[in-house]
Length: 549
Image 1 (spheres, one colour):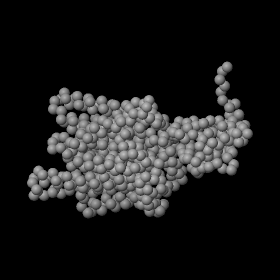
Image 2 (cartoon, one colour):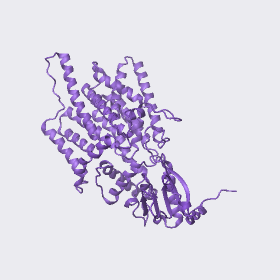
Image 3 (cartoon, one colour):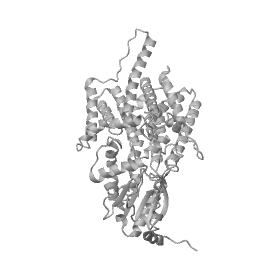
């Protein structure tokens, strides 16, 4: 890689950190993040993790989070900053669902996905000779500033890890085709195993990879016959490994699968469950899910998203350059790309994966990262091709300046998505996001509990027919929290949370012995009423600062 490519890579890493690290806790935890946090807390506090074949995806997110938590705990201990963390205080034990209050915050949870999001850029070094140094530099910049990549790098879910391990597999596979060394074959197998252990949708990526390998092989053979005559022999597919290397890759994949799904040899049923899981997920993919959306769901968010009273959002710049890159992969001008076979493989792979995700009815917005990664790599090739097409130095400078403006525009959107509008439903990447009302509700419950004198011993009842997440995570320090899906015979407790759907009217039914003290939006369209025992509420109100007359 030349000095300009290295400089672009360094700028990309710096930009990626600048967009991903600040104000990591600005957005309340999404339902999925809170559930993942609860499972991580069980692993952190008790050393317990069992793969669930029906929900929650694979184990890598939790095991990969542990080193970051250990490091955070070590740093905190060394510099005496324990008071800055929401650590368990003396006397505070089990919280919601039996989870003790762990020593990590919302921001600390998201550090792991930030690290993998930035790590994507560094993985490009492994394929720099395949993409070309200029294309690698631009792909790094696009990875750094893509609003989708930035937003979901700050999201404590599995998707960013899946994308990272996908790129690791692609990069290691490319290195193997160039070196034919067993170590790269083993790393390719490890990448596949880690994809498997991250999320069930890895099979879609593998299917696209396999299709792209075969299609590229046939394309190259067809082109060779066209150029050299019908009798020309088809060139060998030099990336196919000898049996011993193929076996090595398969064995490494199996070892990773065995270790992670068995929870480091403590849960043998996890191995069977890792296969059984495809029955419920196939059912959901066929339409048995609330997350059913039309074919253009992803493209609407990426190409042009303009809700009322909001600036427009668009990553069309990347898509346009990806089209250029894909065209360059198949054109006859060898100067437009570094390795034509690799560029063609990436093009076919990206088109196939985009088609798969578009056709499947089950859609959640973070899934778009899987095919968007390929688009970004192709966009790097496209940017390099456009620069090469410029013959004069002045034209090249103009092209670089235009591409730079596109990067700046993407970066501006990425910052808006990551911080100012991180929880705004007008953000195309926000999906069933927890509202700020959740934090306000939890703060009020904690304040009332302190005034009660019982603190985290205070009994809290939560009654809701719909999902009440992320409340179990945010109320994890309370020892006595009960959860009901319908109104119990005795709904009363010092503090009661009731879904507005139930029309509880506990203040009227109790003859004002309980007071409805607030109405809080937890998620879009999901509201909770907060009831507090009258005497306790009056005691709390007496502690509030009085407004001057």
